[in-house]
Amino acid sequence: MKTVLTPLLCREARALLDLDTAEVAFVARIPVAVLETFEAGHATPPVTVLATLRRVFELGGVAFTPERSKRGVELRACA
Image (cartoon, rainbow, N blue to C red):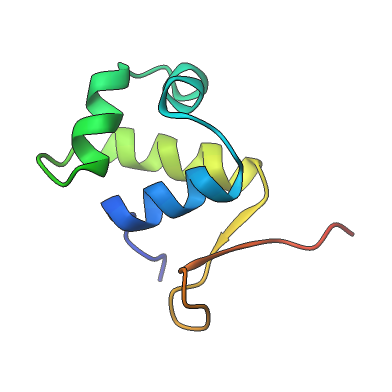
């Protein structure tokens, strides 16, 4: 089962990739305000937006690992 993308995991994944909210929003094709509101914990976007954000982070090399890392995210090793 996939880990639910939480505001904290979203912030951590974005930080791991050294991206700002505008960059992630641009790639995900969502308004910056939607991402900022989610990361602040004020609102949860639709499931489709969460799935898109997760896909953006995973394509950037992020692995969601809250069960084994303190941050909850790690960079996958390149093959």
